[in-house]
Length: 352
Length: 252
Image (cartoon, rainbow over all chains, first blue to last red; front, side, top):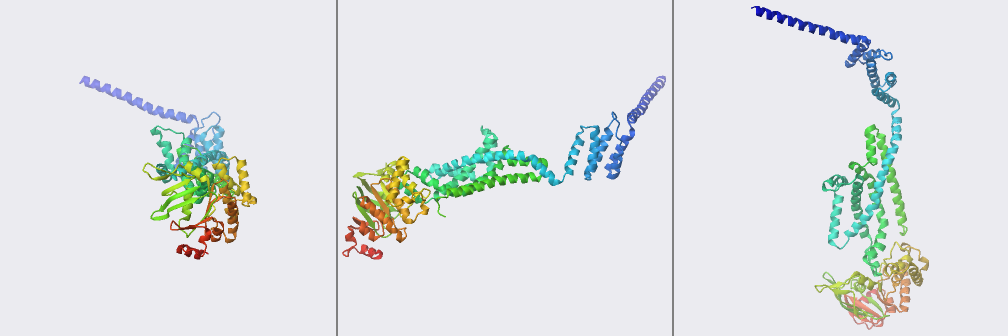
C-alpha cells in the first residue's frame, strides 16, 4: 500500500513538472514571437496580412488601399512587409492597366532595394506596356533585324552552294539517264525516283540523324548541303533531261554529219541550246530552294527561319515573322529578276 | 570513189532500201528522184553512216569501210571514232538545214574545223570567211540563223559542210523546205560547186534541176532503182517505163 501511495505521489510530481514546462513553453513562445513582431512595427505585417486577405477575397480596391498603407521603413529597418505590399499593389495596378501607378510602386521598392529582380522586371513590363503596341513592334524589328540579316546570310550560303552543286549533278544524272547503258540509266532512274518521291525533310533527317548509327556523323552544315544537293540534283536532272530531249533530233544529225562524236555534239551543240529553255524551270526550282532551306532548321542549322522562330517565341511579336517573310521575298525577287534578265540574254539568237 | 553493194535497209516489215548497188565516181553528179517513201533519203543517210544498213557493203576507194562483223557474225557499225572520221569526209545538207541556232553564220561554218579537225581559230575563221564569200553571205557572218531567210540558211549549211573539205557532198532535198523564189539561189550555189568538180549526190523533186545538173539520174521506187541513166534518157519522150512515166507526168 505504502509503495503504491509513494508511487502515486511520484507520478503526480512528474506530471506537474511536465505540465509546468509545457505551459511555460506555451507562454514563452508566443511571447517570443510577439516580442520579435512588436519589436519592428507590428502593424506593418498586420496591414500586409489584411491586404493579402482582401486580395484573396477579390476585394481589389480595399486590398489596394490596405497595401498602400504599409509605411515606408526607415533606413536599416526591416523592409520585408513594405516590399511585399508594394509588389502586390504594383501587380494589382498593372493588371488594371494603371501603368503609371504600377511604375510608382516599383520605383518605391527599388528606392529601398535597388536590385529587387521582381520589381525590375515589372518596371520593364510597365515601360513596354506604356509604349504604343505598334511602336514596340517596330522597336523589336530594329532590335532583331541584325540577327535576322545575319541568319539570312546562312540561308543565302546554303542556296548558293546548292545552286553551284546541283546543276553539275543534275547534268551528270541527266546524261546518264539518256545513256544507252541500261544499268546506268536504271540506277539514276531509281535515284530520281527516291529523291523526288520522298520529303526533303525526311531526307535531311536521314542524313543528319540516320547516318550516325551507321558510323557516319556529319556536321549540320555538311548534312544540309548534302541533303539539298542530292535532292535538287534529282529535280534538275529531270528538267535537264527534258530540255536535252526537246532539242530537235536534226541538231544531233547535223553535228554528226560534220564528223562530231556524240560527246562533242552534246557539249558544243545540244547542251548549249538547252540553256535558255532551262532558265524558267530551273529558276523556279531555285526559288523553291530559297524556301526549302527553311527545312534545315530542323537539323540544328541556324538560318533565317530558325532565327525568326526563336525570336518570335521569345517576343510573340508577329512582326518578326513578317520581317522574315520580307527578307525571303527580297531574296526570291532578286532571283526572279536575275533569271528573267538571264533568259533574255541567253535568247539573243532567237527571232521573236 | 564510193561504192555501195547489195545494200538493204529494213524498218520492221518495210524494206526501205532493197538490194541496191550504187557506184559514185569522182566528180560525178548523181540525182536521185522518185516518190516519197521510196528510200531515197534512207539511201543517202546510209552513205553518210547516219543510218545503219542491215546487209551489204560500202567501199571507199575499193576498201570496205564502216562495218565489221561481231562474234555472232552480225553486221555492226565500226567504233564511233572511225565512223566520225568517215563522216567528216562526206558533207551533208539537209532538207531543214539544221543550222546550229545558237551560233552565228560564221560560227556555224567554223564549228566543224574547230571541234572536229582541231584547227586553230584563225585558220578556221579564214576558211569560214572564204566559204561564206563563196555562197554570197559574207555580210551575214555575224547573223544568227533565226534572222536568215530559208535560202540563206541553206547556203550557210552548204558552207558549213564544205568547211570540212569533203570528198563527196550529199544533198537531201535541199530546196524542198524553201519558198519557190528562194530555190534559185540555193541551186545556183550547188551549180557553182558542181562547176568546181565536186562529187555530189542530190535527192530532189526539182526535175528541171535534175535535167540540168545530173550526169546520171536514178529513179527510185519501193527501195529499188527502177531506172538509171542519162537525164536525156529519163526526161525524153522515148521513156517507156510506166512507173517513171506516171511519176514524171505528175511532177512535171
